Image 1: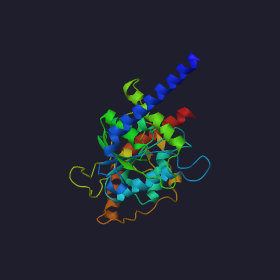
Image 2: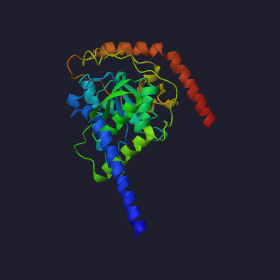
Image 3: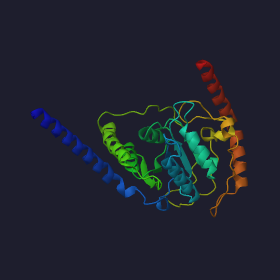
Image 4: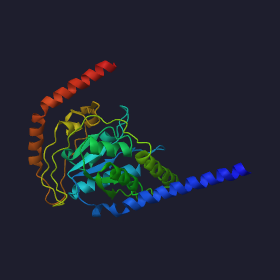
Length: 305
């Protein structure tokens, strides 16, 4: 009987601990989460968290679609200069960043505005790499409202100044199972940050985002984007994008039929002819780096075969 009460007491203490840690995470971040994409603040970089584009039982994942819709809206509203697409690419058959890039191109987001990170295996990994690998100091985080408190809490601990832009999945609100998992993840995050010193699965060498064109302290309307460097070249160019310290091949086969024309709908958007000239100049300037990256990739392929 005494053992039963002991178990009940431990469970009650554990539940109270989880509730207390969740209150800490939520209260520390709630004032930096916008109510809708229309009210999101401007930052140089928007970090889009990857997730599966499909559901286990079939059909499209509404949370994935909401994140991309919100990211595309931030571009159209001129709230960000660069979208950092961070997701899981642990195997050649599963590539969240490439899928996001392709679907954002279909939403008329130009390739100059997107950078791919192939080692965003978790919320923690995505934010650590954004800060330490890509040198992001300020960002707007794009994900679901229930996910934003944990993401912002991690960003705070890393010294990354961030605000939250909610991707609202109207067709599928979070269920009890999803919210329970998120509550446990928030509690585990506190341990990751302050108890057992979690490290990212893969960090890799530092990389460079395109030159920022938006000043978050002066204007929410960026001018024409500068061309990206070799690390942020579009996968559609048939080049190798080094976004995870690994050689990730973005072949032309994946981009065939997906070269969607950029239809600029917002007033004051950049001249597409000027963007094309800038992209060609950037490509010519980065050919030596692309050649070196391709040789490294071929070397890796030959070693693994």
